[in-house]
Image (cartoon, rainbow, N blue to C red):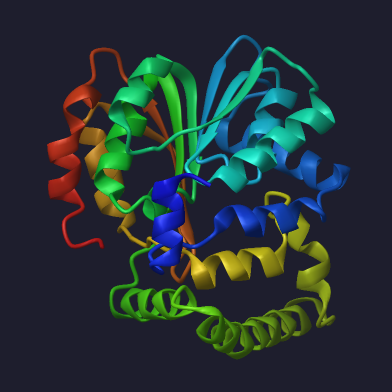
Length: 294
């Protein structure tokens, strides 16, 4: 574990995402992989990614790097968390051993020089990551700069729920403050999330466990791992969907597709970078447009 990452974890400033992803990989099967591939295909509006360069910023479990590789892209995955890097390497070992078209390494979404060294990509993907960097505005700006002209940017960011978001920030800080507090948070909220899911399953499907059974169909994910990620996920920032769209419009990006939520969770955006856009000068704009989102 890198010194900076380890120090943040020890100080209660950062959740150990990689540890949670390592646990998730034990649940990963071919059905989940296929669902991830299909969800990526649908959001990007493509049949395949053959011949395209795909950048996975904050690759996490590595599942969507795998999905992009399955679709034919040349993939570069990186993450700030060394355990997440190890997860992506494990998936590469399982499915694309020694594949020169899939590279995995440790790196930061906030490291402008590192991003610049990678060049431009046809697809830049960062799902549920940039709001965990500690500087959402800079992370968004760096991601924009990595997109080639005419390329796609697929991001997902936590929805701004104002006072409720501040409540969840307090929960996350409590979770990361130590093992006893972590146990209290998990024992308080996981049963509540489970009961909510059972109630929805009963009302919508007549079967209380149906939402658990079908959860893998949401991008191939796992409910318990998503709950833990939500409860512990520090750093934590949020953004209103309108602000995100306006920020990218000013930087020369056209909105292609959007999925919004009216509650906790992520809003999803796919943008296309226009020729001669202003992405290289996006940082001041991003900081202004997202002011107060922390």
